Image (cartoon, rainbow, N blue to C red; front, side, top):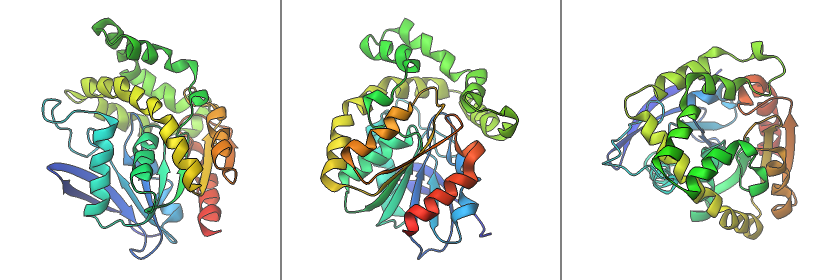
Length: 284
């Protein structure tokens, strides 16, 4: 097992924390986490791949151990977060890499791919959506806020930030909830409890509409560049439906799609199986 290094680098005045493992000269995978977690969601995956690949998992700005600038100093949009991660990759010397995208990491990673199609060698999407048919009815309260961004509609979304909701996201759709370690959701709730974190997360829930608006752009990128793509999907995800994984084949006929009997946070229960799929996919 290769050691994991924990570092922080300045990216335009924002400290971006990241974990890294694997040989420096090995094929690189940039691991992009989602809501409401951070790079620690890859804690079980990284050791299973670090013998053969270089794994880099940053915490997005406002998440985990990365800086959480005040909303007056940084506008929390997915476009701005993608720009920080774009620059982060340049700062630490990532020139060509595969991307592993999950949840919020998908619109960040897909923006990078659209900007730099020559840099992205492959895409691994774990419940990382790019199609409207992949959005479940669980998005309805958020869609209401998109359509009418009133304070009352914003306040409705605060339930998404409650500790019990975080735990539910980890356990919903998992056949055996005793397989889910409390470490992940407990750490997520610790970060969510920081002063100012809730307003930042509500800003991002509101801005998620910009990602849906970009779905046609992402799909055009898929059709034009035909990136190698592997979808590894928790099929019982309450937010991102299996149809979203299957839709990749519409634009990338050679896309490989695998479903697992689990929920949104598939790595919590299926890290071994997903690592095996990634190893086969990237080595083929």
